[in-house]
Length: 246
Image (cartoon, rainbow, N blue to C red; front, side, top):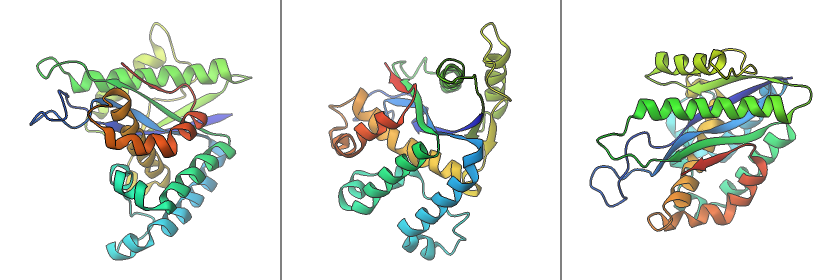
């Protein structure tokens, strides 16, 4: 079997000091999050998500004037404290999304870490490269250690301005001292507004970003408790080889 992993960024790539800092206050974590599906399930899943998206956000889609197939709402704008608290429809959709991914033979996946380096030494490109290599390592371990027989995977990422460097990181992971043999090719980069699957990854990343903030800086993001209340248990049950490191 061949899997496709769709991943997008969560948190913030820049340095973090505290939430009250005038400049470096966005998020204490950075990582990649999304989902993994067997390739045979991708087309049907994309159709299912498109239909649910149109049901959930019909008013916004109509108001935009764009075709629903190319209209997108960012996960960070969808999964806000206000939206999750106010709209039961969003909470029910999230449960259905997790269930659909699992019933399709897939799982949620996220990997990232707390940003401890001060602004003077923080290197965004190095951080992204580390997280990407860690994601590839864990997915490779899933395919070689958790699956019988060994499986393979492709990796799809949202567009990034450091495309060349990212492909280099992936190639080193594939053919380095500890080769990741389950990765078929270096990652593909997709424009999220043209791919329903990448929009799903963006929504999951938006949700995981809320978790990461309260997991690693609970005193600074107490309002994110609502995400733990509604979704944390379901997130853990639907995820494989995932985590946000210190």
